Image 1 (cartoon, rainbow, N blue to C red):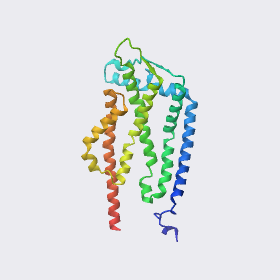
Image 2 (cartoon, rainbow, N blue to C red):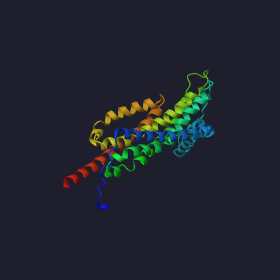
Image 3 (cartoon, rainbow, N blue to C red):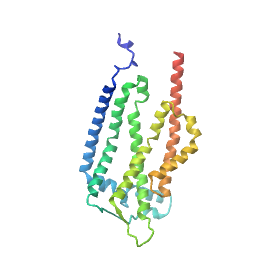
Length: 282
Protein backbone atom coordinates (compact mmCIF):
# COMPACT_ATOMS: atom_id res chain seq x y z
CA UNK A 1 0.00 0.00 0.00
CA UNK A 2 1.41 3.46 -0.85
CA UNK A 3 2.47 5.58 2.08
CA UNK A 4 -0.08 8.29 1.33
CA UNK A 5 -2.88 5.72 1.55
CA UNK A 6 -1.94 4.38 4.99
CA UNK A 7 -4.74 4.83 7.52
CA UNK A 8 -3.12 6.93 10.24
CA UNK A 9 -6.05 6.24 12.54
CA UNK A 10 -5.65 2.48 12.27
CA UNK A 11 -5.16 0.98 15.72
CA UNK A 12 -1.89 -0.62 16.59
CA UNK A 13 -1.66 -4.33 17.14
CA UNK A 14 -4.02 -5.13 19.98
CA UNK A 15 -2.24 -6.05 23.20
CA UNK A 16 -3.48 -8.55 25.73
CA UNK A 17 -4.34 -7.62 29.29
CA UNK A 18 -1.03 -9.00 30.59
CA UNK A 19 0.93 -7.11 27.93
CA UNK A 20 -0.79 -3.88 29.00
CA UNK A 21 0.01 -4.70 32.60
CA UNK A 22 3.66 -5.34 31.75
CA UNK A 23 3.84 -2.06 29.83
CA UNK A 24 2.31 -0.19 32.79
CA UNK A 25 4.76 -1.86 35.15
CA UNK A 26 7.74 -0.51 33.24
CA UNK A 27 6.27 2.99 33.16
CA UNK A 28 5.83 2.83 36.94
CA UNK A 29 9.38 1.51 37.40
CA UNK A 30 10.82 4.39 35.36
CA UNK A 31 8.73 6.89 37.35
CA UNK A 32 9.99 5.45 40.64
CA UNK A 33 13.61 5.53 39.41
CA UNK A 34 13.35 9.21 38.45
CA UNK A 35 11.57 10.01 41.72
CA UNK A 36 14.36 8.23 43.60
CA UNK A 37 17.02 10.26 41.78
CA UNK A 38 15.38 13.66 42.32
CA UNK A 39 14.59 12.85 45.96
CA UNK A 40 18.17 11.71 46.60
CA UNK A 41 19.57 14.92 45.11
CA UNK A 42 17.22 16.96 47.31
CA UNK A 43 18.31 14.93 50.36
CA UNK A 44 21.99 15.67 49.68
CA UNK A 45 21.48 19.46 49.77
CA UNK A 46 19.63 20.27 53.02
CA UNK A 47 21.34 23.65 53.30
CA UNK A 48 19.55 24.74 50.12
CA UNK A 49 16.23 22.99 50.71
CA UNK A 50 15.90 24.15 54.32
CA UNK A 51 17.98 27.30 54.81
CA UNK A 52 17.19 28.91 51.46
CA UNK A 53 13.72 27.58 50.61
CA UNK A 54 11.68 26.13 53.46
CA UNK A 55 12.89 28.53 56.15
CA UNK A 56 12.86 31.45 53.72
CA UNK A 57 9.35 32.70 54.68
CA UNK A 58 10.56 33.00 58.29
CA UNK A 59 13.10 35.64 57.23
CA UNK A 60 11.76 39.25 57.40
CA UNK A 61 13.76 39.94 54.20
CA UNK A 62 11.88 37.28 52.24
CA UNK A 63 11.02 38.45 48.73
CA UNK A 64 7.25 38.52 49.37
CA UNK A 65 7.66 40.85 52.36
CA UNK A 66 9.97 43.13 50.38
CA UNK A 67 7.50 43.34 47.49
CA UNK A 68 4.65 44.13 49.90
CA UNK A 69 6.77 46.88 51.39
CA UNK A 70 7.47 48.39 47.97
CA UNK A 71 3.77 48.19 47.06
CA UNK A 72 2.81 49.88 50.35
CA UNK A 73 5.28 52.68 49.73
CA UNK A 74 4.07 53.14 46.16
CA UNK A 75 0.40 53.41 47.17
CA UNK A 76 1.19 55.33 50.40
CA UNK A 77 -0.17 52.63 52.68
CA UNK A 78 0.66 52.12 56.34
CA UNK A 79 4.39 51.62 57.00
CA UNK A 80 3.55 48.50 59.01
CA UNK A 81 3.78 46.59 55.71
CA UNK A 82 7.52 47.24 55.83
CA UNK A 83 8.08 45.89 59.34
CA UNK A 84 7.61 42.13 59.46
CA UNK A 85 8.70 40.78 62.80
CA UNK A 86 8.54 36.99 62.99
CA UNK A 87 9.16 36.58 66.70
CA UNK A 88 9.27 32.81 67.07
CA UNK A 89 11.84 30.03 67.12
CA UNK A 90 11.71 26.67 65.40
CA UNK A 91 12.77 23.80 67.62
CA UNK A 92 13.23 20.07 67.21
CA UNK A 93 11.69 18.17 70.13
CA UNK A 94 12.27 14.55 69.12
CA UNK A 95 15.53 12.72 68.48
CA UNK A 96 14.60 11.44 65.00
CA UNK A 97 12.43 14.39 63.98
CA UNK A 98 14.99 16.13 61.78
CA UNK A 99 15.97 12.97 59.90
CA UNK A 100 12.40 11.82 59.27
CA UNK A 101 11.45 15.34 58.23
CA UNK A 102 14.33 15.48 55.79
CA UNK A 103 13.20 12.22 54.18
CA UNK A 104 9.66 13.55 53.77
CA UNK A 105 10.71 16.91 52.35
CA UNK A 106 13.19 15.26 49.98
CA UNK A 107 10.34 13.13 48.67
CA UNK A 108 8.09 16.20 48.22
CA UNK A 109 10.79 18.16 46.40
CA UNK A 110 11.60 15.18 44.20
CA UNK A 111 7.91 14.80 43.38
CA UNK A 112 7.56 18.43 42.32
CA UNK A 113 10.77 18.46 40.25
CA UNK A 114 9.98 15.18 38.48
CA UNK A 115 6.29 15.97 37.94
CA UNK A 116 6.65 16.76 34.18
CA UNK A 117 8.38 13.42 33.67
CA UNK A 118 5.56 11.61 35.49
CA UNK A 119 3.01 13.22 33.17
CA UNK A 120 5.14 12.30 30.16
CA UNK A 121 5.29 8.64 31.21
CA UNK A 122 1.52 8.56 31.76
CA UNK A 123 1.03 10.16 28.35
CA UNK A 124 3.27 7.55 26.72
CA UNK A 125 1.13 4.79 28.23
CA UNK A 126 -2.20 6.35 27.21
CA UNK A 127 -1.39 7.87 23.81
CA UNK A 128 -1.23 4.60 21.77
CA UNK A 129 -4.95 4.13 22.46
CA UNK A 130 -5.79 7.54 20.97
CA UNK A 131 -6.50 8.43 17.38
CA UNK A 132 -4.23 10.82 15.53
CA UNK A 133 -6.77 13.67 15.86
CA UNK A 134 -7.04 13.05 19.60
CA UNK A 135 -3.27 13.09 19.93
CA UNK A 136 -3.20 16.40 18.06
CA UNK A 137 -5.70 18.12 20.36
CA UNK A 138 -4.02 16.81 23.52
CA UNK A 139 -0.41 17.28 22.41
CA UNK A 140 0.10 20.11 24.91
CA UNK A 141 -1.13 18.13 27.90
CA UNK A 142 2.39 17.65 29.34
CA UNK A 143 3.25 21.35 29.11
CA UNK A 144 -0.03 22.72 30.45
CA UNK A 145 -0.35 20.16 33.25
CA UNK A 146 3.18 20.95 34.41
CA UNK A 147 2.61 24.69 33.92
CA UNK A 148 -0.48 24.80 36.16
CA UNK A 149 1.24 22.61 38.73
CA UNK A 150 4.27 24.91 38.98
CA UNK A 151 2.11 28.05 39.03
CA UNK A 152 0.14 26.57 41.93
CA UNK A 153 3.32 25.59 43.78
CA UNK A 154 4.73 29.11 43.35
CA UNK A 155 1.45 30.65 44.52
CA UNK A 156 1.42 28.44 47.60
CA UNK A 157 5.06 29.16 48.42
CA UNK A 158 5.35 32.88 47.61
CA UNK A 159 1.84 34.04 48.58
CA UNK A 160 0.00 31.65 50.92
CA UNK A 161 2.97 30.47 52.97
CA UNK A 162 4.47 33.87 53.95
CA UNK A 163 1.03 35.30 54.76
CA UNK A 164 0.19 32.28 56.92
CA UNK A 165 3.60 32.19 58.62
CA UNK A 166 3.42 35.91 59.34
CA UNK A 167 -0.11 35.71 60.78
CA UNK A 168 0.24 32.51 62.80
CA UNK A 169 3.81 33.25 63.88
CA UNK A 170 2.80 36.58 65.39
CA UNK A 171 -0.55 35.51 66.81
CA UNK A 172 -0.53 35.44 70.59
CA UNK A 173 -3.13 34.95 73.31
CA UNK A 174 -0.79 36.17 76.05
CA UNK A 175 2.64 37.77 76.37
CA UNK A 176 3.53 35.06 78.85
CA UNK A 177 3.31 32.36 76.17
CA UNK A 178 6.58 31.92 74.30
CA UNK A 179 6.46 30.98 70.63
CA UNK A 180 8.51 27.82 70.26
CA UNK A 181 7.25 26.22 67.05
CA UNK A 182 8.16 22.61 66.38
CA UNK A 183 10.00 21.81 63.17
CA UNK A 184 7.27 19.31 62.24
CA UNK A 185 4.53 21.94 62.63
CA UNK A 186 6.33 24.58 60.54
CA UNK A 187 7.39 22.23 57.74
CA UNK A 188 3.92 20.66 57.65
CA UNK A 189 2.38 24.08 57.07
CA UNK A 190 4.78 25.01 54.28
CA UNK A 191 4.61 21.65 52.47
CA UNK A 192 0.82 21.37 52.77
CA UNK A 193 0.15 24.85 51.41
CA UNK A 194 2.64 24.39 48.57
CA UNK A 195 1.57 20.92 47.43
CA UNK A 196 -2.15 21.55 47.91
CA UNK A 197 -1.95 24.73 45.84
CA UNK A 198 -0.15 22.86 43.07
CA UNK A 199 -2.87 20.19 42.95
CA UNK A 200 -5.76 22.68 43.16
CA UNK A 201 -4.35 24.68 40.25
CA UNK A 202 -4.82 21.60 38.06
CA UNK A 203 -8.56 22.44 37.91
CA UNK A 204 -8.41 23.75 34.30
CA UNK A 205 -6.81 20.52 33.11
CA UNK A 206 -9.38 18.42 34.98
CA UNK A 207 -12.20 20.42 33.38
CA UNK A 208 -10.57 20.03 29.96
CA UNK A 209 -10.62 16.23 30.13
CA UNK A 210 -14.09 16.06 31.68
CA UNK A 211 -15.37 18.33 28.91
CA UNK A 212 -13.65 16.17 26.29
CA UNK A 213 -15.55 13.09 27.41
CA UNK A 214 -18.80 15.01 27.76
CA UNK A 215 -19.24 14.99 31.54
CA UNK A 216 -18.89 18.76 31.94
CA UNK A 217 -20.40 21.46 29.73
CA UNK A 218 -20.19 25.27 29.91
CA UNK A 219 -23.92 25.44 30.61
CA UNK A 220 -23.60 23.06 33.54
CA UNK A 221 -20.69 24.97 35.04
CA UNK A 222 -22.54 28.30 34.73
CA UNK A 223 -25.71 26.80 36.21
CA UNK A 224 -23.92 25.56 39.33
CA UNK A 225 -21.60 28.56 39.72
CA UNK A 226 -23.05 29.40 43.17
CA UNK A 227 -22.45 25.87 44.39
CA UNK A 228 -18.93 26.09 42.98
CA UNK A 229 -18.29 29.20 45.08
CA UNK A 230 -19.35 27.32 48.22
CA UNK A 231 -17.10 24.38 47.33
CA UNK A 232 -14.21 26.77 46.64
CA UNK A 233 -14.64 28.34 50.08
CA UNK A 234 -14.68 24.89 51.69
CA UNK A 235 -11.52 23.85 49.82
CA UNK A 236 -9.78 27.11 50.74
CA UNK A 237 -10.71 26.59 54.39
CA UNK A 238 -9.49 22.98 54.30
CA UNK A 239 -6.02 23.62 52.86
CA UNK A 240 -5.19 26.91 54.59
CA UNK A 241 -4.68 27.85 58.25
CA UNK A 242 -7.76 28.97 60.20
CA UNK A 243 -7.47 32.67 59.37
CA UNK A 244 -9.63 34.77 57.09
CA UNK A 245 -6.69 36.36 55.25
CA UNK A 246 -5.21 33.07 53.99
CA UNK A 247 -8.62 31.68 53.09
CA UNK A 248 -9.51 34.81 51.12
CA UNK A 249 -6.16 34.84 49.32
CA UNK A 250 -6.72 31.21 48.31
CA UNK A 251 -10.38 31.65 47.33
CA UNK A 252 -9.79 34.48 44.85
CA UNK A 253 -7.47 32.59 42.45
CA UNK A 254 -9.58 29.45 42.83
CA UNK A 255 -12.64 31.32 41.64
CA UNK A 256 -10.58 32.80 38.82
CA UNK A 257 -9.53 29.27 37.84
CA UNK A 258 -13.17 28.21 37.83
CA UNK A 259 -14.12 31.02 35.46
CA UNK A 260 -11.12 30.21 33.28
CA UNK A 261 -12.22 26.56 33.28
CA UNK A 262 -15.62 27.63 31.89
CA UNK A 263 -13.77 29.27 29.03
CA UNK A 264 -11.87 26.01 28.47
CA UNK A 265 -15.13 24.05 28.45
CA UNK A 266 -16.51 26.46 25.82
CA UNK A 267 -13.39 25.94 23.70
CA UNK A 268 -13.68 22.14 23.93
CA UNK A 269 -17.39 22.24 23.05
CA UNK A 270 -16.76 24.37 19.96
CA UNK A 271 -14.04 21.96 18.83
CA UNK A 272 -16.36 18.99 19.28
CA UNK A 273 -19.18 20.75 17.41
CA UNK A 274 -16.87 21.45 14.46
CA UNK A 275 -15.72 17.83 14.40
CA UNK A 276 -19.33 16.62 14.46
CA UNK A 277 -20.21 18.93 11.59
CA UNK A 278 -17.29 17.67 9.52
CA UNK A 279 -18.27 14.08 10.26
CA UNK A 280 -21.90 14.75 9.18
CA UNK A 281 -20.73 16.33 5.90
CA UNK A 282 -18.38 13.44 5.12
